[in-house]
Structure formats: C-alpha cells, structure tokens
Image 1: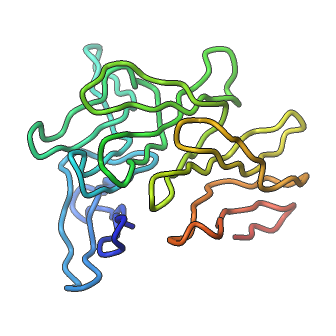
Image 2 (image 1 turned 30 degrees about the horizontal axis):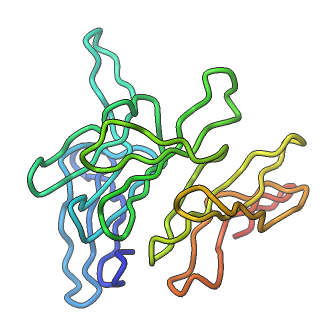
Length: 200
C-alpha cells in the first residue's frame, strides 16, 4: 500500500506476453494503471515522493543472458537501475520516496544476505544488518525483516530504519518469512511454513 492507503501496488500477469508487470489500483476510484514497461521479479514498493516505485527487474547482459537488479522510477529520470544492485532483490521504498531498502546476497553463502539502503542521489550503498525481505513501516521509522537462523529456520525481526535497535519478534523452530507491518505499526503479519502445512 502507499503510505496514505489510497493506492495498492500489485503484480499482474500480462495476458499477451505471460510476463509479470506492476500495476496500481486506486482504492477511491477503482482505477487500474500500469506502472512500468519493465518486467517485475521478486519484490516491489510504492511511495509518494521522488522515487515513485522500486522493484526487482531484469538486466540484459552483453552475453545475451539476464540478471536481476533493483530498479526505480522517478518523474525526472523514468526507469533506472540503482547502481551496484546487480543480483539484489526484495526492494521496498520509504514512504517519503527517498530511500530504497533491499537484500544483497552474500558471496560466501546462499542462505545469508545483507539488508542494504540506497538513497536517491548517492551511489553509496549502506549495509544495515544480516537478513532479507525488508519492509518499511508506514511512517518510515522502522524496517521489519526476515533473518535465517543457524538451525535452518527463519525468524522475524524489526529495527529502526537506520539499522539500530534490532529486536527479534518471533523465536520458533519453524520458518517465518515475508513480514509486513500493519498501517498503525502495532502488528506484524508474516507467512509461516510448519511441517506439511503452510500458514499465514
């Protein structure tokens, strides 16, 4: 959802090409609008600021292959890839539309990744902590995220948007992932895979 709750950003499969693309739905007018021509991968976020949308999308390499990276759309620059984000995924954009949070894979481990921040106008990426699937709170003060634990499961954590005051929310032997904060910031929803049953 947008910070004011008026627009929902979703992925819809294009009936002609079969590719997943981003659309917004206006809760007040019931209007659907395409957001980007670029195909969507894993994760996206919407804001009402300089960065309108952030998403994971393909990059066409010179050898003909594709890789994923973090993309943003701004009114001035249109669609543009965030420098240094090749191989990164699961982006979200801060409500003020100035910062993108995302996960960057570890070169030494497929299980671990680092949550990073990219700020509009800067090529410097700031590492925050170990984890993945980060999502901003509606007021932009907090980031909720998933962290893979040493026993093979994953738990839900929360921290301030600058990476401080990390706090573990769940502590179980199950896999808990894809967290998101409620609009008032009081609750966290997440998906949980428990044995043969998937719960949310």
